[in-house]
Length: 328
Image (cartoon, rainbow, N blue to C red; front, side, top):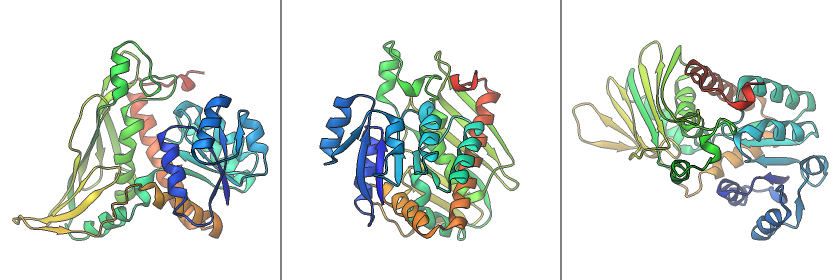
């Protein structure tokens, strides 16, 4: 299956490298608004075909699928353009700015008989399966804390008076939708949609959250998610059960998953695959679902994507964090 790419940042580099470890995928085309930028990126990845017109690229018959990693606020227009040309779409997280976009895009995908995926890489890692297995060993879950606190060098630019995309409402930015969604997707993937959610942000003058604490309420426990682009943490994650706790490092990669039993310093290491590029697993899964038309797996991914976006939209609006695309 041939695919094109929209976006020339490091995340697109990682996706392209991951595709090389999934049989049957060929990178066929590159898009950028600027020809020199598209050409340089194409040369870097040994791709001959470049586009500077998105509609022309979407209408091309040289690809069956596209990976989109443009700024958050552009996702919807870019995604729908390709869906309406009957191209499968893999869109980098966060897939959309709000539920209206999610619903319209998924309707377009269904109407055109193609798949639309959110590239939430941690859900496809073998380490996620290890966490699911580990939950069975710690008994009834009573609490959870999952931080994704990572200082952004672009915050320095923001403090210097610049407007980096991720720190603006114009481009649907902020800590929750950039980093918090990794932890939230894990929570929803492991436990389902919570009964309630409340967010306590540190809001910047630009209108987005630079940092925040998300509290999820489940029938049997309350979970806490910390997210920040203006501070730093070791990002050790813990899920606490009545028989022990499940521990792992970093919500994005879930490294070194292990169980620590109550009243014991002994750690039981769970099966771990710490691939240096864990996008490999999502690329393989998306390709498998497309080729086999595994609608069961597809619907499960859609449910998680919808639930995560429903939560982030609600708690943003609860705190008057409104993206420009929502002001129309």
